Image (tube, rainbow, N blue to C red; front, side, top):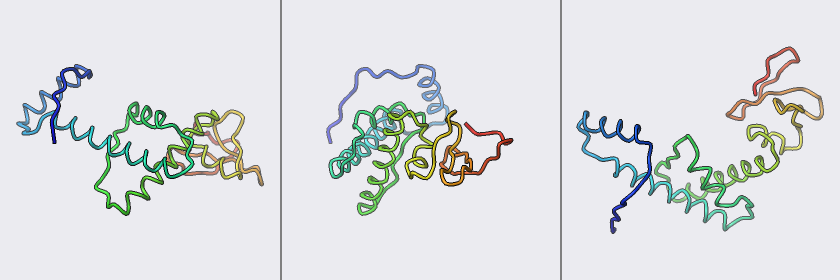
Length: 159
């Protein structure tokens, strides 16, 4: 494998300096460039895996949406060592999630409510703070993990 020396790379100066200092103070044998190199490999693997899955099915989410969202995410994405047979299923599940995120954004429905509404059994409240079961009118909050909980009119709603 050939190595490419990158001449410029913009990062937050304070964060970089603090990390370098921590590496030195703790006598770390590895370097930040090693970490960045590994992170880029993981990122490339993830994008390739999603790209291949996208080509196999009828997803409408553009790769630019996925890439931009992943890059801007405050959560680091890491791929554990995945067995080849599990990788295909993991890629399918991840593409479905990206597709839902894309559709939610395009319909202005908060993502945490989107998959619930997509079932056709629930409607979004006018203030977009809870969902209502169409059949019964019962109100449900949805937490950031997608778990639903019943709410009453006097209860404080999660937004």
